[in-house]
Amino acid sequence: MNMRIIVILILGGIVFLLTKCDFAHFKEKIQQEFDASNPNGDKGFCLYFPGKGVYPYTSINTLSPPAESINIKYNNILNNSLHAFAQMGLFSEEPAGKDDGKPIYRYSLTPLGQQHIRRQGKSDGFCFGRIVVQSLKNSYEDMPPTEDITYISGRKRKRVYFDFTIENLPDDWLKANMPFIKKLYGKRMEQILSKKQARYSAFFAKEAGDKEWHILNKIEIIDDAFFLAQRE
Image (cartoon, rainbow, N blue to C red):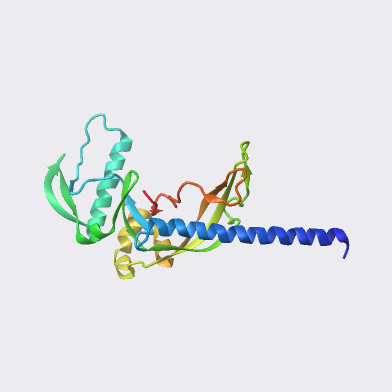
């Protein structure tokens, strides 16, 4: 074996060991982020809905002018979500008269809803379970590969992909209410909650002169359907 091949193999081995070391560090950091935001292991993911409401809340059908189409759509989504969550036992739903000739309802959190409500950002959500990081990867087939991006200031940024599972889910409750969840959030949500696993990515940064990578901001949104719990 000539010297050139030996050098390439040695360098490749060094890169592999460094990457493996980095990945172990990233996995630990990501898990720490989840556990810090979810110390009781019961708010790892959230089914969220529009609005940051104060309950009891009375639904409306008409909006004060100017009622833009996006606001009308938003209000319809909110009303549909509240009704579905009432069917799931998280809200009580009491008739409160009519608005624009259509029924309106007063929604109050049930004991189950009070147990699982989580207010975060501009949305409320009902949260369950614990996220457990399983493995990290450089890339997925439908996503760009992990690579370091260096800025003029010397700061580096890296995207890390990871697989995770969800523990401590209320299986019987989920099974009974999966039709409502699928209707609200689609087939992807049904698949994730049925398999109790999914994948996502986190961003890390390293300032010039730093030895370690640090998680960048907070791990927040997986997709439009739900988010992972984060610190306020």
